[in-house]
Length: 163
Image (cartoon, rainbow, N blue to C red; front, side, top):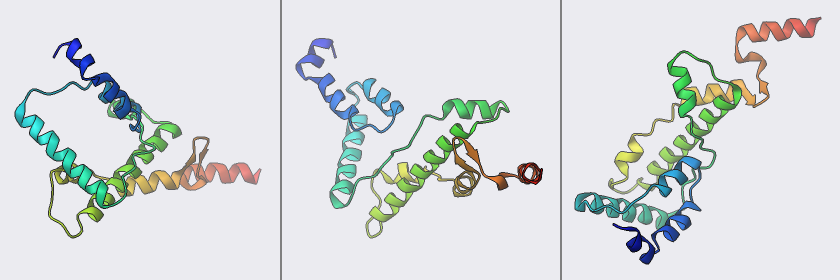
């Protein structure tokens, strides 16, 4: 489609309105990059998932993705053997918490019903609960690591207090 059609349809205004509901910068970027599809199969699939999402929202409350951050840089650093700082670990924890909320939302929405087009998307989520719990236990804030985050840290802090 050409720019005149986009302007006539006020496509960019729609994207602006949609972007206001995005809970992360990555989502806002994806929205800004959206273009209408011309593939009939894709259009049908997207309409089905939109209808299923609306159906879920009408039946109960919405799902929250607040606190989600882009952790791609952190994952890349980990893949080459690097370490993460407390802020990065907290961001991963927030993402895992959002995955847990989404998984719980899916289960509660489908408690009595069959699957819908969103079920495969939700089933791909893995909250990694043990990792999430360990991050919550060890990282108290961006500025504070728990004394018992590791046995070595516990011994060091204990010896410092003993001086």
